[in-house]
Length: 165
Image (cartoon, rainbow, N blue to C red; front, side, top):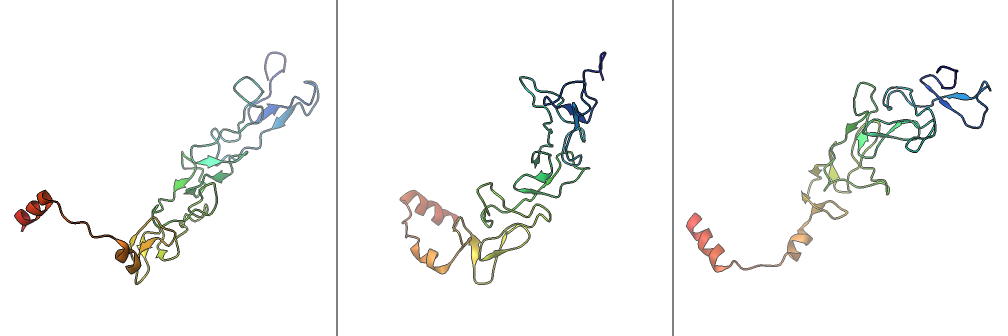
């Protein structure tokens, strides 16, 4: 492509390891068309702002070839303008499987629940537990209730509570 055939066509990038006349001077992009912007089109050459062969991923997609959903997202879909859908996990009921912040299965969207929590979005407590909480178990137990200290009402709060009755 170009006036003197010095540019690669869309879907290929300039491999600087080869002379421009070499048949391998233009290398096919390895972008996943479902997860990348503009399908299998990558940056054609190295410049100050681009890297030859770099794929431009949709908003909720990552990976060198834009082939997987970012943590917290699932279902890589070519018809989704953002690439993947949010899992919408309940933050109080969900655990993180790794340092990247994975909270759900990137294929099914099912959230990874804390020990005594369940539901697709980890938003329900198992029997005998209630009140989702930040701790690693994910809910309030009788022990926690016993640990809550009694705080007396101020005179203003006491007066307001009497007016409501």
